Amino acid sequence: MVATGRPLTILFVNRWRGTIGPNVWLEQIVSRCLRRGLGVHIASPWRDAVLDGLAASGARVHLVEGIEWVPRSLNPLRYLGHVAAGLRASRELAALARRVEADAICINGLNALLLPRAGALAGRPVAAVLHGTRLAGLGAFNRLFFAIQGRWVDRYLVVVELGRDLLAREGIDPQRIAVLPNGVDTERFRPTPRGPGLVAELGLAEGAPVIGAVTHLTPRKGVHHLVAAMARVAAKVPDVRCVIVGDITAEEDRPYAARISRDIQRLQLGERILLTGRRADVPELMNLFDLLVHPSETEACPFSVLEAQSCARAVVGFRVGGMVEVIQDGQTGVLVAPRDADALAEAVLALLADPARRRSLGDNGRQRIQRHFNLQTNAEKVVTWLEDLCRLGRSPR
Image (cartoon, rainbow, N blue to C red):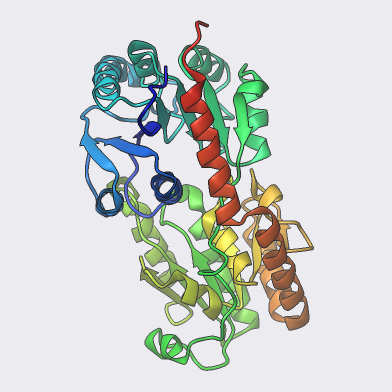
């Protein structure tokens, strides 16, 4: 139960690294928890720049070995090592929750089969956050996974309506699921003139059309579809340039990044496509783009798409997952059939040829972001939801 005479305290469990969606969410929510006067502790198997920044803001970071996500696989042998590790980590998390007097535990990710058990051991309510929509395709295993995990998770948070539908399909009571979309800082990400210094730095021709992508070089993000589409776009618009911002997020993605570089050379697009790696000036880059392409094969509520719309940029992407909730097809952007590079190219060519339509889509997107995906409003709702979780107490299942 929640103790009196001290601030509510939340123990976040996080194993993500780098500037990726779940860590952006963590930064946003922890920052607002601290501003509201909540106590914040973060359990992680490592320290990185994200956690160091949150520690500098007042969060307490604790290193807990053995925190890892369970692989999404139909091979039962892959899970044997995770059972023992998960049991040990849940005991250590429970001890930590008691030691820091946490009122609730929030696990920043869904692929944690046994970690939620820490709540039962410590007598604290537990929340799990679903950032993606990759639950399909594992058949009966999903039911078993959530039958086990659901015993220990009091509340689930998802960022798109599709997430609630997917969890409900696996047997989770919809009353235990909250839909709280991601948000974007509409003041930081706002329409501004294209910076001539940035144009020169990137070696772009003044006035040339620029297609942008802000993503990661990992297969499910579908950058290879964008590269294939660019071959067709460049054949029709010779002066077009494509700026791809992002890098690998794990060593296992290095072969994919090498493949992307090879494809660019094979298609003779070396002068058309620029791979920038990670950059900190994303708002300025968004305003450099004439439009954003998001070629991901699976998606929920991507921050880069929200940020592009907040900068009044039209977005082209695949009709997958939560993209249909984030993009209003024909109103704020264009959605095409999944994995169809030709359709992607045609949508890009149509928008490059119609500046008035691009502007209309971008303006509509900016207005919709301000109404439905504003960081201040959405993040405050999440913090209130977490405060309610703290007050929930733990009732027997």
